[in-house]
Length: 189
Image 1: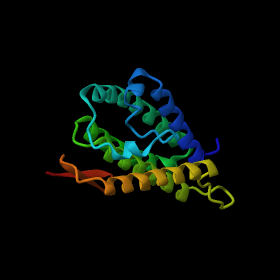
Image 2: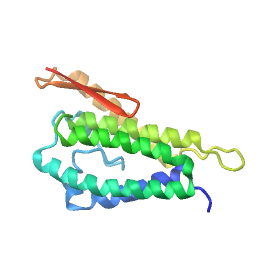
Image 3: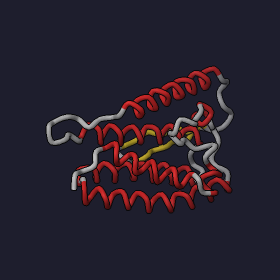
Image 4: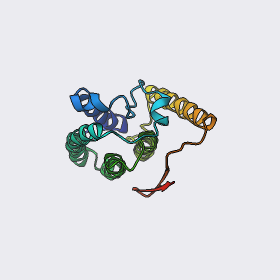
């Protein structure tokens, strides 16, 4: 069996995520959470509120299905491309860290979306830079993925400009940083 490249692994993850988005729970939170499918807006990056209790319930149900998806993808990677397993497990750890903070209401949605983008890009970079085919060529990011990344960069910049032009929020400000795959957040009041 030929090992799958990073694009194939990302495509499998994207397919499973797309399937989950069509569920009632997925539809409940799709308007606020980053989807990475070209339909996102800068507003999702500026959302300074946590999920509502109903959205948190839907998010938890959706997460349970997503965990099963991740386990399936890792099991397949272990069989066909073991080199990917570590990167996928790290990605899942980061995703879980974001999930727990968001599901508990500790994290505003916009910040969670930005952290998700960072985590997705780290996985993309890890997989792209780690895999070489049997003739030494990098199986890197495809053109469509690079185009989507540029569009995401434009939305990130747009959200930064909008945020900079707004008066300071009256709500507490949450700042988060990654320490390995651990998410450390502090709230300034």
